[in-house]
Length: 92
Image 1: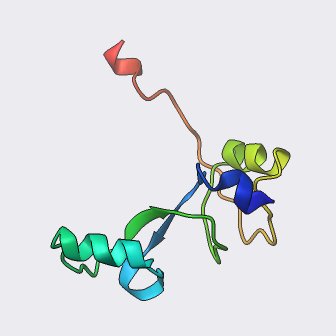
Image 2 (image 1 turned 90 degrees about the horizontal axis):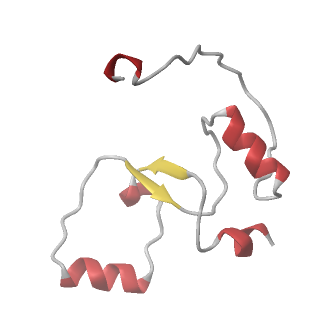
């Protein structure tokens, strides 16, 4: 149900290396060949609905995903509290 609900708009990108842990579809491989794209060893932010072993997320986004049954939280490893201030105050 969650996967169907989020298939058109995955809420969280995953920082993964596409060469190591991402299964490309036949269409993606054909597109890569057609566009003459090169392989890269760098990590990319890729949107998808697959289980994540470790992920960092802001509390408000986590709250939204849990309240709307878009997310299942198995375990919390740690909580980091960071003060957030005004970002553009100097420009106003």
